[in-house]
Image (tube, rainbow, N blue to C red; front, side, top):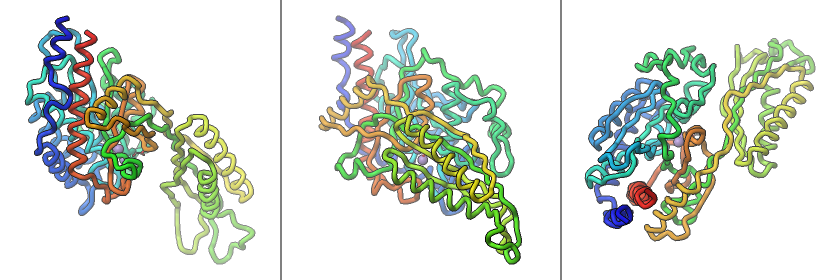
Length: 435
Ligand code: GLV
Ligand code: MN
Ligand code: MN
């Protein structure tokens, strides 16, 4: 069969291993991106900030150099497209690769950026080989995976998946700037954000390479691992109202102290998570209104981030936390309001894509590649609504992440470039063989 013969003439997934300078180029680009920050002396790059704009400009240049055409959609996702088609595969679909450019405050340089820069390197290599592919590739650089600036997250990937909520554009940052205005200031058109939604039938899938952010691979002595799925998450804001009082004159049994009430709730949340298998919960922000050294606090807000791979556990435990907190609030005569502002269910990675990644790892000599769940959130959570997803994890030292201590060895970056490039070649073989 002509197609099968053609498939045999293509190089195997690892016919040319990543050139020695590929990993160094990736590392140098990660170093360059680490300097693009909105804060002096540390890496912080939030969604739609000036630093985000500079990162978009820099990465656009690398995408163009790699042979891609570049555009920014109206959710500020940077999209580099490589389409080496000859017309043979009419109506060709698109394979999406990528990750995100935004960071937490005082971040490491690999979370997100590694997946974007490695994907660009993979495309660069395929373009240099003039590899004909039976599909187009797009490298997506999302802008809001971390959800730091607005009380929303995955805005870019939810827009791509057509999953924005009606009130998303009116969400405000700490300075009262709405998401719609921030998009406008960035040069995007929030009124046209629906046009960022991708057509399901055009997409093969979304594959993201990301640091593990844990120690499983490191402990097992593996550079790379397969991801079985991404844990869902629920985020809520709790608002407590007690009664402001004078610190000297309000008797202890007369107080309705919102802060001590929050403290008891936070400890109850920690205890419940520690005692429940498969559940992690974090109170990551605490706001105190009208605070003063001599004032009994009257109003407090705090956030809850709740994750469980099992959706039923997540639902059940959220209800239980609310009940725990309501009981504490009632005993302390404090009012409580809990508002969920983000929710994603757990998504499994798609078996066919995972099988291809597994094959590629086997070609690297890892017949028994490890498979692990991701307890961190990723853009794949949203992308799974519109196309199959898969992820490859890369070992990171001590599992450090969301901190400047993040570190990935150069050899593991080389393995990442090889694996991602090999994955695209392997998928190309499979498409041709099936055509
Ligand atoms: C993103 O890093 C998240 O898991 O919250
Ligand atoms: Mn990330
Ligand atoms: Mn992160």
